[in-house]
Image (cartoon, rainbow, N blue to C red; front, side, top):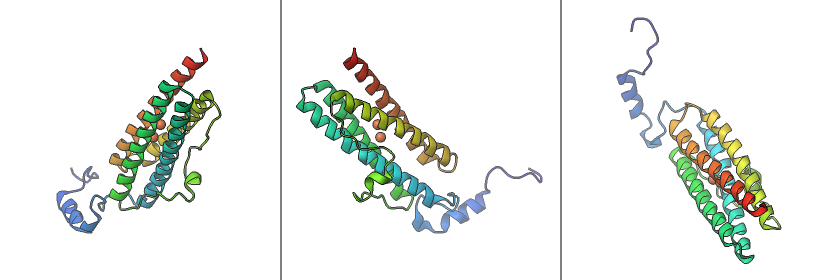
Length: 180
Ligand SMILES: [Fe+2]
Ligand SMILES: [Fe+2]
């Protein structure tokens, strides 16, 4: 390799580093210094998901009450998927040595998306669509921020982003059906 900068850390250094601070588990010496920032950003995403679970569940029960069963089912499915996202994010925060913030206090100010009840079925769908679009933009930004520093977190976020895009698509279809 001559004098050029080696692409990979040599085996001895890797092995030595792995033995240091083994109590940190998945967080190795090679993990970027801004771990705290990544944990904080993930906690904001966690708050967003929790707010989305609550909003979709409210919408599910309200839509059930006005006899809009297929829309009510869609809301419930989204609520379940947002809960899965929240769980994935919380688990990753712990893996990174942080603590997931489930405190109801300040939940709404930590969340990117809003909690809007909506008066009619169309209002509910529109509010959910706005929230999905907020989530899509914020996940895209977080993914760009994480970049190559933490591929595992990035892959998780990419999976979540893809599902938020599906949610937005579903909601547009529902709106079109209702307004046809
Ligand atoms: Fe989500
Ligand atoms: Fe979503």
